[in-house]
Image (cartoon, rainbow, N blue to C red):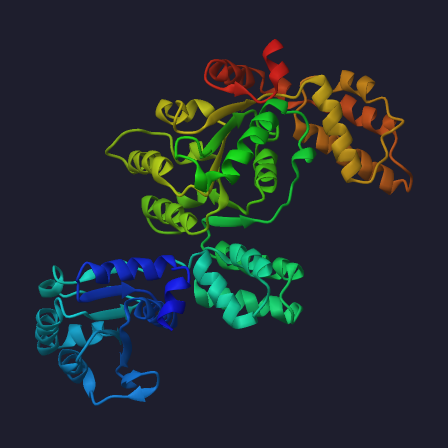
Length: 492
């Protein structure tokens, strides 16, 4: 049994607790609502350090593997720990209530600390809430149990399903960021669709994860699946991504300074920033999560600073993933150290330097002049791209993409002639032109023609005309501050 335990890869949670025990600390407080998972982790640690694991609760008393022991009440549990001979781990569930109500229990726990110190006996209090009396604050290690890592999820799935290694790792990656209880619900949803766990189970798992993640109101799981080929133009950005994908995939074997950490995409509204981010996630073969900066500052989720920090910390547990900060300038616009936005900005800069390797940040911005200079300087993001209005050849490519997506054969269309009517158009305006043409043709119960597109294009007034001054301002601001996503854009 001991040899087998040594050969099993150690989970992150078990490693953290084992290292706390190795430091000699006899008292540990773990805040977590997952009692069963805490028990699993302690049993894993117990196998590694060759210590028996005892469990106590106010309803079931002290027991090990179902066998009860003579230990009545909270005082009896602490007496049992002191009298126990040999190494042991003692898991006390919701013991904070006894600490809150009784000075005698608080005093006896201090006795436990003295008696267990350097005797390989470790008391672990688990509770969904934190309550550590002042007199015990310096004697007790406090831990927040983070969501299970890939190792822990694979072991859980192996116990629940017995599926092949390849499938176990696929599903475990999809479940990352969820608690073990939430992972169990997602797994049962998948098994309800198909009793045998396989690749076809992933959509059900991801849908359950989407519901669980989206309930936060600040982070949204985006299940879009946009391919890089569905983005028209932006060859400079595409080339950069092609080069960086390999580095990101080799992230565990590279130094921190080489591993791609993220990009900032700024530019004119409707020119493909959001679409590009969705394509990045698909191209990197990673899930995509969107942080809504407007929602963070809405006040519906507590103080903005706390909501933002919590969102970033939550995403650390979702890695590997692409994290999309949409309209980042709406939340990070000030560097004043005294204000809340200033504190958020300071946290974000530090977090960008220290975040998990498997988290690729993609930030988008429209009002780029609001972004602090510290954010766009080299080193914060790997690159800052500016997305301009598409050139003529890019417009033709975008027309083809949207026509093909709607089942329209554009082989006989003279799209080059059409671009005479679309000077200064954004990608979003091209899409709306195609949608209007398709709608008109469907109402007339006929196929879309080139003439439909021309008639609609002739009537549309593009954003570049109605907001000419603003767009010129954006271009001027970005000229020396960003790399053009379309290489030819520099010849405008």
